[in-house]
Image (cartoon, rainbow, N blue to C red; front, side, top):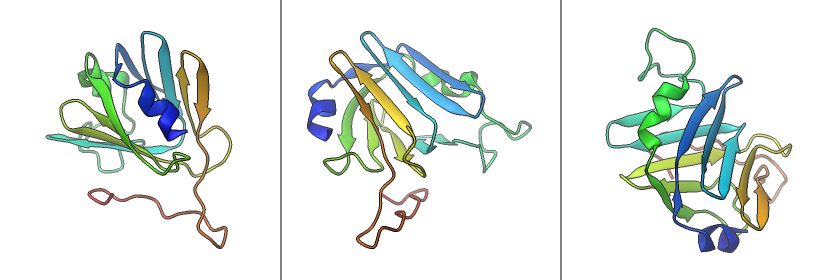
Length: 140
């Protein structure tokens, strides 16, 4: 799965939005992705999480909006760090931005649609079948 995704890089972001739930949607020419699961975006001067738990970007608002991810427009997904089956992948975006995904369910937690295939994430489990711990800020 990782090989398939990386073979399509770079992916230029021409659309970035946060919809109710909140769902992060990124897309470009001939590709799209959405993240229904928890995610964390970090970079120089950037720290966003799915529910804006730290109220860093929008201290007066409870949830993030599409305005909070407009800075991604024109950037590219240039790399992916992950296991071969893309459990909790980190998407590396130009400008030193990392988008780390944490799938807490097996029901379509994230989807990456590419020209010839659609990749669907799943929840990571350890050798005992327990869910993997959620990635924390600053920890890869």
